[in-house]
Image 1 (cartoon, helix red, strand yellow):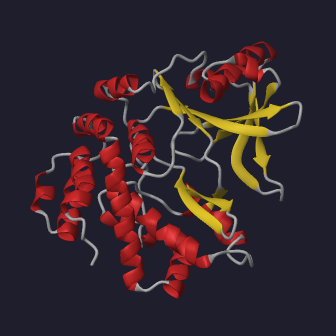
Image 2 (image 1 turned 90 degrees about the vertical axis):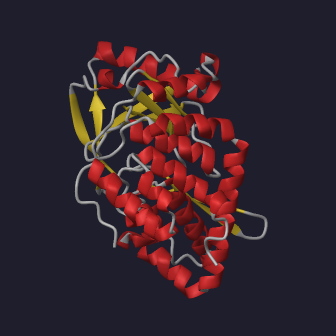
Length: 345
């Protein structure tokens, strides 16, 4: 069982990481910062449709501040969605600003609504933590998912990731008659492998969503991480394998019912091959990102020593014992998709 007992330490954005973000156009000037949103006057708890406390609070600003903040948020949304073209934002307004009071980074969630058809969307404003930025960029480069985010100084702005929260999917959708259990079990195996290869930790059911897409014959599923704060921080291999979190046990049970060990190994090999293809396609970005990551501090020395021992035993490769930091461990872990393509036999 995987358990994280201590709160993760946030890490500042280093000069090499900021240079990488500038080089690949992730750094953009925006008219408002995270600290500006902290100047709210009061707040009320936000409840869901059933009346349960969401642990988010809706915040309110003075009349003068609200006009300025709402205009700035519309401009930010236009940057995320339309390259800064404000004309397409003409019918949008800021419906709500929520603050997550229980998370490590205490993000703000902005709800944008179209006043013509009441359609709505979200985006997030957070403190820029280096671990999360590396996690977002690795997800963008190595997974099937494209990540839309921008950074300005110490503020991170992220697009909303669409999907059913994993814990809600497990609670309310696993018994749906239309559920394709085999496809969902296969996707969990592939998600598990993606997290392990790039060392993304803490992927229990509250930290991922299930994106459900009807196809012409069947329904397809994609499991997408939504929390990247635990990118290559913890010191135990199990933390980087979603299969070891008890919250995910119902998905594990699907796999046990529908897949043989040989089938699981096949899907693991397939996902590693896909990661290898993505690395080849984005080799220049990966090289630059790893250079930055290998020069950065992203964890504690004892965590690094513990994890490199775990990875050495798993891969039977002494090069892991030579790694000096988490960046080097991530880099070598990624290289295993080339050096040991037949790891699962």
